[in-house]
Image: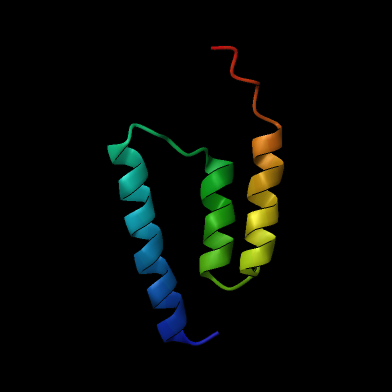
Length: 64
């Protein structure tokens, strides 16, 4: 992956973090590390998606 691609991913990641913060969401260190691996090109978008879905599956069910 080129430096320009990583810079673009980092820019998008910063935007996502800010948007989540504005909505009142917080990310765990595990979540942040996962996205950082994607930004650095260590995992693909498909691998990122699969990892996120695996994390979602571990969340407690909403009883409201």
